Length: 131
Image 1: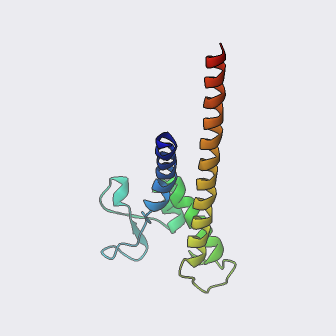
Image 2 (image 1 turned 90 degrees about the vertical axis):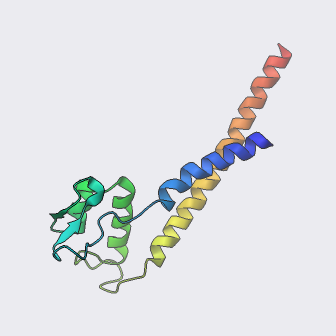
């Protein structure tokens, strides 16, 4: 039982970490001109000009940043795009719903993997005991 709880906690932490540690790396920097993005996370420590947030993410963002940006651009309309809701800016509720559903699906997948792992270990132990 302790092994199952340990495996489940490891699986959940691996799944949760990228989702919970997500931050918009290409935030507007108030000290920069309006057309520039702060890319301190790239190690430059100063503002570099980017035409759009997408170009900033393509240069400096993580895969998760780009996926979340694409979800937002499809639903909210960013960088001047219309999005499926037109120019109405949503507060990120749809994004949170998508992330929660993704988290639940990954958690269920992790539980299934642990169950399969336990069955394989049990069958190997039976073979070892029989032999």
